[in-house]
Length: 441
Image 1 (cartoon, rainbow, N blue to C red):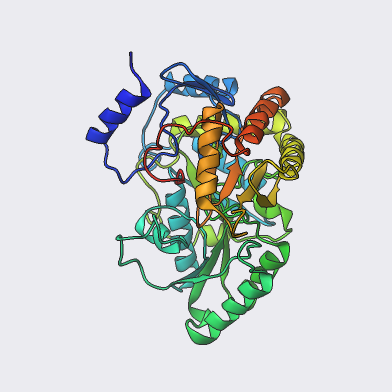
Image 2 (cartoon, one colour; image 1 turned 135 degrees about the horizontal axis):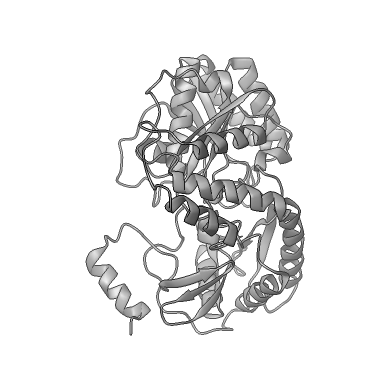
């Protein structure tokens, strides 16, 4: 019989240690918000493949669309023989774009491709080269994306030198005592001391930081960034790779602010489990790049495009925007109540929009955030049958990314396991995790 332990041994011999996993279980099958490992154990999935499965594992409509596409063709390369599903998906995304005016969309494969190409487009459109990002932000693992990412370990250590003219400013965070004014003061100081705003092509920001700790960008921050971008001819890029496609109760997280970006990076849940990403942008900006300047062999795979069109149908037909809000209210209520008990680990800073919810695990002795405590909580949750992820600059934040298609009964089952895991010593420690303490996006 294949076991998690035997696969771990094979992995150790065959796979480099640079890729980490947040659990030591090996998946065998999954449906909606449930996953079974190779030993037959069942888990409620509050990770969703790191925000990839807003419509759940193997949604029937997604699988049907993929099956139909597989029967026709799997690949031609859009740059060789284009196909209707790419065009149809671009048309649909253009209608959904969170800004006024004409939009155009280009498709890729990974989130890092989306953020890198957004910067490429911004540089051509503006004739400038500098980029401003935020501490704690995560924009991918390629060299430019890593440079924009605002966390050294494990994403940057040993990989430099990085591309130049990437600057970082603080992101508002209650646990760090930082607010919008701190961020704006740092931006103004950056303009005064380090980079002429006339050299800045773009500012890139996540409406809710993913790996950085589920910190929500205050509307007043996004509004101030829009004003500064307009004043200096800078483009505003929103990275919606983790926040996009109904997770926050809106199609895009930036819509909570009322601010209109110039370019939108998308990926993860768009493909419903199939690799797909893209950039949606104002048409004139998108058309600034000459033919052949953008693309990729697998960009906009016909199989992934078919899946994505089905995903958008599911979001609309199953009213997942409203479902995200309802789930979020249920999650918040349960976590808030658990946090009032005197037998749980201390938690603080419950936050998020819709069903993108995070909270910090605190150290009872020091009153500071506790990355080790969050890691232990995730281990107890796993033993209780719940797949749960941490994030944050110290791994201190518990993030919830349960599929929006999960039933109330399954959601409650997962929340029961989370509540049990909040009690220290309630479960024996799960076998040692493989790799890093968090599952990198």
